[in-house]
Amino acid sequence: MNGYRKYAAAVAVSALFLLMTSLFGANADSPSAKSTEQKAGIDMGTVDRCPVCREYIFRHPRWVVLLYYEKNGAFKHLAFDGLKEFMKFYAAPEKWGDYANIRMHVKKIVVRDYATRKPVIAQRAWYVAGSDVNGSKGSEYIPFKSRKSAEEFMKKHHGKRLLRFDEIVKESAGRLP
Image (cartoon, rainbow, N blue to C red; front, top):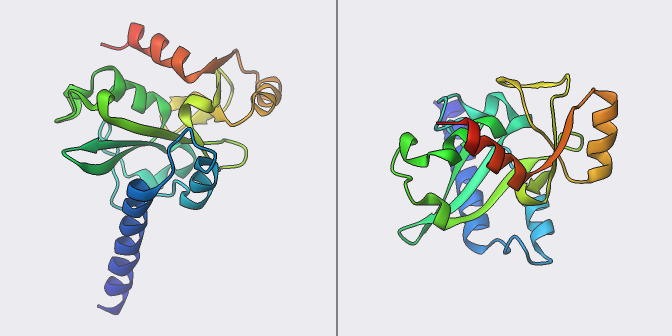
């Protein structure tokens, strides 16, 4: 029972930290947003599941994508085990639950830099497509904070294209039902 209490306390502290970060964290465009991202990290507990594939997120920490949003005055998050899974959700959120108008309430989307594993606002990241590095579900968009890092990775791992988040959204919308 003692081990269970420690586990429950750790989960509760993690959930409280995420809630406090969501409620009092910096605006994604403000100068202090970078320090908030660094402090918050994007490590998930053992209870978060991807709404698309239902896998536990802690199994794929390198590929985690977090969507922070507001619903009925409360700040919430969804966690995905890769950008491809996120894009499936984002293309048709109503398919995955009560999320029909979630895009209007998004506060920020966070990915993890592949090289440093630090959080990056998804819209600020650079993504390599078509490399020889696979994510949790096979081929994946590989995120980087800087263009330079993405280009170096592209050369080393035979990447085919360098994209921004908005380009991936447009590309995914055309391919997904």
